[in-house]
Every structure is written in C-alpha cells, then in structure tokens.
Amino acid sequence: MLWHLSIGSSQIDLLAALQGLWSGDESIAATILRDIRLPRMVLAVAVGAVLGLSGAAMQSLLRNPLADPGLVGVSNFAALGAVISLYFGWAAMAWWVLPVGGMLGAAMAVLAIFTLAGLQSNGLSLILAGVAVNALAGSLIALALNFSANPYAMSEIVYWLLGSFANRSVVDVAMALPFMVVGSAAILLSKNFLDALSLGEETAQSLGYDLLRQRAMIIIGVALSVGAAVSVSGNIGFVGLVIPHLVRPLVQHRPSKLLLSSALVGSGFMLLADILVQVFATGQELKLGVVTALVGGPFFLWLIWRLRRSYV
Amino acid sequence: MSKVPSLLCRQVGWRKSSKSLLDNIDLTLTESELVAVIGPNGAGKSSLMRAMMGLIPDVQGSVSLDGRELSDIDIKERAKLVAYMPQQQPVAWPLSVQHTVELGRLPHQGFRRRLNGCDEEVVTEAMQMADVTHLAERSVDTLSGGELSRVMIARLFAGRAPIILADEPIAALDPYHQLHIMELLQQHCQRGGSAMVVMHDLTMAARFCQRIVVMQNGGVVGDGPPAQVLSDELLASVYGVKVARPDGMVIPQSRLD
Image (cartoon, rainbow over all chains, first blue to last red; front, top):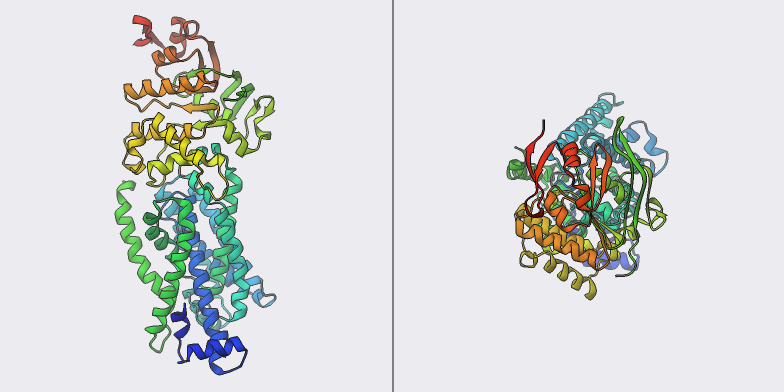
C-alpha cells in the first residue's frame, strides 16, 4: 500500500507528506497524497476486493469456474447503466445517480444470465448467455456513443470505459465505497450456503437454506458491489475470473473460504497492477482495464483449453 | 434418540404442465420404520421424496411433521429433523471427502461454522459407518460412483436427522456395500429413526424393509408388508414382468407383453 502511495507522476516525500496530512498542514505533497494518491489507493484496494469476491461468488453460485462479472456481461451492463446516466446528464443531478445506474445495469445482467442459462453448471450455456448479454450491452453502449453530443463527450466515455483508478477524487470514492461494502457483506453472509450448494440445489435446501432468498442475496450483493465498482473505475475485466481460480486450490476448493481470500488477493493484485501501470507509464496513460484484459484474455483461453474435455 | 416425529402426506398432488406427476397420495412414515418406495421409471418416486422434503413449492395437499405443516417449520429446524439424499449428482468442486461429509453438519452450525468436539465426533463416526474413513483426504472428483455414493451417505448420517429420505442410495454400490448401507439404514430405524428409501432391487426391499410402497403413474398402488405387496399380480401390472421367487428372493424373470 505504501509502495502504491509512493508512486505517481510527481515525486513526493511520502513520509513528509504523511506527516503533513496527519498534522493537517497544506503542503503540496500532503495535498497530492490526500486528493490524488489516497483515493486511488483506496479505490484499487476496494475494487480489487469487490471483483475478486464477486467472481468467487458467481462461480460458486453458478457452480461454474468460467463465471466472472466481466466475462458474462455484468460489468458491461453496469457500464451501460453508468453510461446512460452520464449520457442523459442524470449523473449530474445527484451524487448517487451514477452508482445506482451502474448497479441497476449489473442487476439486469445477472438476472438475464440466470434466465438464459438457468442454474445448471453447464459451462456452454453460461458462456453463450454471457456472450449474448455482453453483446447486448456492447451494442447499447455503442448506440449511446453513436449519438453522443460531441466528440469530446464520446472520448470521455470511451476512456472511462477502459477502466482506471487515475484522477478519482475523494468524492468518487465516498460515493461508491458504501455500496461496495454493503454488497460485499451480502455476499459474505451467504458463504455457508455456497458451500452447501456445491452438493446441488436440492441438497442445499435440505440442509436448511432458502434457495430463493440466498440466491437473491448474492445477486443483489454482486449487483451492488460490481455496479458501484464499475461506476467509479470503469471496466476492469478478468480479475473476477483469474483471482478465484488461482486462490481455489489454496483453500481446498471450499466456496466459503474462497470468498474472503479472493477478495484479499484481488486487492493485492489490483494494487500491484496499478503500481505497474504507473511505473511503466510513458506519456500516454496506460489504462488498468487494458492491462488486466491483456493478462486475463490469454488466461481465459488457457482455462478453456484445460476445461475443454468437460464440454465435448 | 428422542421421540421421532412422523411425516405425514395427505392428498399430496403435483401437476406440471397439465401432467399429473403425483396423484392424491396419502402416506405416513412413523418411528422405527424402514420403508422402500418402488415402482417403474417415471412413476413419481423421486417427486414423492421431493414433496415430502418440502422441495416442491406448488405441491397440493399437505405434508406435515407431527401435525405441523412442513412449510410452517423453520427451514433450519426442518433440516435437523429430515435429511435428504437426492439421486447422485456430481459435486461442483473437487472438495475433499472430509469437507464434503462435514457439510452434513451445516444445519447444526452457526455462521462461523466452528466444528466443536461433538461435530467432529459425529463426522468421524458417520465416515466410519459409511466406510469412507480411508478416503478422507481424497478429492471427490477422483472417486468412483459407488465411493461417491457412500460419501453422500456419510454426509446424510452426519446430519443426525431422525428422518431420512434417500433416493436410490444403493443404486451405484457393489453388493457388499449395498448390504452394508441397508444394514446401516436398518440400524438407524432400530434405534428409533425412520427412513424412506427409493430402490429398484425388489429382493433388497423385501429383505430389509418392513413396508413397501409401490408407485405407478404418480399414485400409490400398493402399501404394506413385502409379502403382501409384492404379489405376482401387482408386479405384473406395475412392472410388466413375471418374477421368480427362489429362497425368498424376488427376481425379474421375463417381460410380459
């Protein structure tokens, strides 16, 4: 975290800045730390955690290692919700409009996937539903871009979609963080249900879990946390796919243990990725979402390659 | 074992897209009873199990546990009273056998899921009973069908529920373990518990169960002691087979067309 704080486009003495921040003086270093670096760090930690957690929750809920908020279109739909609220200028009306737009979009996507793919642990139907949902979100975003008022607004939206933690203010963080916390709590509360669910839906019910309620809680949790995360950071893909997959063997594949550990590893991964993005920045800013996609894409291919036996 | 509540079905029916899958079923499962449910494929045996477990939301009629409607009982409390084992399904993740059996303790555990000494003892005992102790560290995706069945039976016993509903628990087992599991179910009922078991092996049903329920087309067409229920006429009309009966066995011999 300190490493992350110490990195940025201008050199500051981190120790002095922290002291300055503590004692409340208004040196440039302290201001940079407070207004630029701290929000960025908090955001990286929170978004990483939320994406890791949501990925783990969706994989356990759908009993499918290929589920990921980004891959099946949840992030894109959240982005669509946010874009729509930006596009029509609603986002300026109240601070909560943007995250709520994102969360509504995310909720729609999760519901659509449930309806299309059902709840069987069938990889193919899940991915097909995800492709459909993703394509729909993509085309609607394209539509919004197509009719955007001016090129500047358009590039604004495109850049925002690419996903980054740069230039987010304390206000942005304060806007999204509560939703991420509440959403994550909802997901974590259903950890035991997710364990029971690995034995199948009926067995889970027979072990004392209300299927509809537990499912609804996870869907709402994912929608809240991913929706809020996307509305503040844009689209950062594949984290929810890769992180739970790497963590799973370390927790003996138990869904309940996977949740928190994926969140932690997700945070760490996101911090590291955001550090790398800044270290290797050369003039033009390298967007974090681009980097995770570059890493995650090949990983996804590898995963399909490894799992392909179960689909033929 | 404390007083075992009896599970009661009154005029239970279930229709799905205008097809009647369960038709006006009256059944009681009481203390110390081991009941076999038999019948041809598609007769509604699994649906009956699911209805009795409260897994069918739009079921007609009433299923009650000691006079209380199943749907009125807190789902966690119900899980402590009735344990259910569906037909074999794969486990979603390569969990270890130990962890899988421990899931049977879920109804008794709080949010933190700390296994106390009693839980551990029950799990260990359940694993011994189902003969899966030596598999404890194996991951469930490496097991054979029969081994997985036994793991699920251990999971079932780990819940310590007085009432057991099991859908074809011995279908995937070798003869040794078929006998073994039926004996375990028998012991469970001798200790006062009750169990209703879907099965296809008529000899096993006749040998271990005091009572056999025969289903056909969603309805119950026979219910009573094996000697009375497994008559040539009933088996002919339900299964369309002629049976041989050497030494108290009931062996399908030829098809009647």
